[in-house]
Each structure stands twice: as structure tokens, then as C-alpha cells.
Amino acid sequence: NCLTHSYFGKSLWHFEEDGEPVSVPVQGNISANEASTLLRATLAGAGVAMLPTYQAGVHVHAGELVRLLPNAEPRQMNIYAVYASRKHMPAALRSMLDFLVQRFPEHPEWDVGL
Image (cartoon, rainbow, N blue to C red; front, top):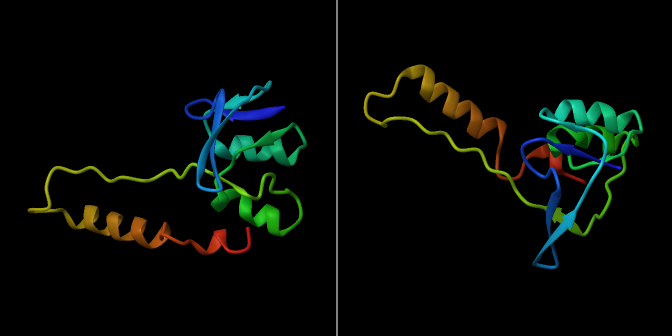
């Protein structure tokens, strides 16, 4: 029973294995538009889910969740900031961009050991 996200991966999960793209059709009885809802359902034993490591990693390390398919890497999702111009950038926007770069580094610590 695959617990899916409403906006991505609802019927097809994408991975890379040995440098090759792999797509797996999935189905299940729970779909949500928020990853924390899927995390709670997964912890409750409702099925398997593709979850962000910043949310699920602590539960994997605690033994509450098990990473399936350790040789298959899920497709990376990126964050993009779109704004009008670098000229006259408000301080609040600059602070937010700096925060995002710090919070989501290329190799985040929550991925260590997963």
C-alpha cells in the first residue's frame, strides 16, 4: 500500500539506480498534499511512502522507519527562489534567501547515514 503525495508521485515514483532512471507505478488508499501527513500515516503502519529525508531521517535513525530500496535514489527535488530583480533587493528577501541556502545545503546533515 503506497501512501502518495497528491502533487507529485501520485501514480509513478521515479528513482535512479546504477545511474539509470527507473519509474515504478504505485497505488494505495491514502494520498495527501502534505508530507507530514504521509509521515504520520507511515509511522502508524498504514503503508510505505516516499518521504523527504529531512522529515523521515530521524525516524530511520531511531529504528521507527526502514529505508526500502537503499540502492535506488529518489529523484531530487530542488528549491528555486523567483524574484523580480537583484537591484534594490529588500533586506527581508536577502535574509530569506540566505536562510534557505543555509537550511538546505547541497549535502545536508540529515542525509548522513541514510
